Amino acid sequence: MTVVDGDKPRPRRVRKESPFVALRTALTAWLSRPLASFHLVLALTGILTVIGAVMVLSASSVASYNPKTGSGVYALFSRHLMFVALGGIVFWVGLRVRLERVRRMSATMTVVCLGLLLLVLTPLGSTVNGSQGWFKLGVFTFQPVEAAKVALAFWGAHILVIKYNVLHQWRHLLVPVVPVALLMFALVMLQPDLGGTITLAVVLLGLLWFAGAPKRLFGVILAGGLSGVLVLAIIAPYRLARVMSFLSPDADTSAEGFQANQAKLALADGGLFGKGLGQGASNWGYLPNVQNDFIFALIGEELGFVGCAVVLALFAGVAVVGLRIATRNIDPWIRIVAGTLTVFLVAQAAINIGYVVGLLPVTGVTLPLISYGGTSLVITMLIMGVLANAARHEPEAVAALRSHGPGKFGRLLRLPAPDPYRPPSSRKGTRGAGT
Image (cartoon, rainbow, N blue to C red; front, side, top):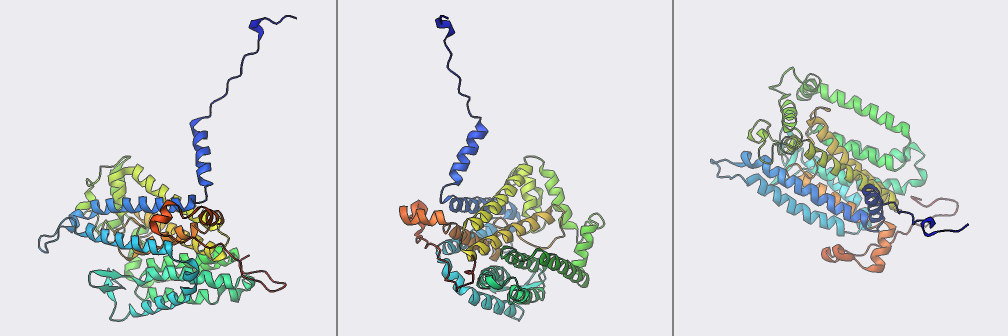
């Protein structure tokens, strides 16, 4: 049979990749890079800090202006920038310090924080918003419970790693971590500070979870915790009023339920894209102290649903990256610390956003990196620095940094090369700690 030119087979067309598939492939390739976690922590910290500075400027300009004292519209914003600068230094310290040294100092840090929690209850402490939980040092204020959360995470992880081989025994799993945590709870509740106690409890639960505690233990702890919160809410009139306003938000919109109702109105006024920066009515006293605990409501009012979605996506990114760092590390202490600190940050953000949108009672917890600066902002930046440091201790990152050099960020920040993890020697017939 004769084949004519028209019968020749035609070349097959190559199907082009869809943009979604190409983007997913590029993202997967980028995430497989040794320092991807480190760069993500830097990016998330920077973006959230910038958003926080912009929103604090918008929220505080009216509240800052006071002709009687001579303070201008940038007074609170200037203080916030001062805390951001201090937080940047602390971030660098958390990123540069040797994690082995942090672990060795964790017991000392815990003892110091317990001493500060005792001292703040004496006349040396100051009362802010009904809670005697602050030290005032000139223009600076310090809240020791924020430092206690980080110290508990460092020291608790250290103890649980040491006791790894005997954690199947309840007395070794719970002692001494749980008694020390309960002592911290008691000292914080004496201030009283329910929000600080709840976030401390999140740290304890994170430690036990990442140490591999039995699931039934968490049921017992949660049941006891809910019972304790209920008792504390009943015995304190102002807490009981908050709970009742949460259960019946429309019963009294001018007293305890005022801020919660105003926050919902601000979110509703924002619509899809918001009114624009500086255009929200919350700035003019309709939502008191909007730059602190209720700044998410202002984000919804001025940036709309889109702005709220961006903030939620960024905190979801913190959760994913933090847990990625925890799972990719082989040092058991770093795994527990990274996982616990990540859960703490994301839980604090969830509690704040939860009571702003009306899903939880108001507890006075700040939105990490976004609310008006202070001890919480500085400690949060320390935590992000430690997470970035832990990201540089992933095995692939260690190999890349030791073979190819510190890279641009490492040279700029003068970061030392991390040491590879060496498991502790184990006795014959036993497993090494943190296998």
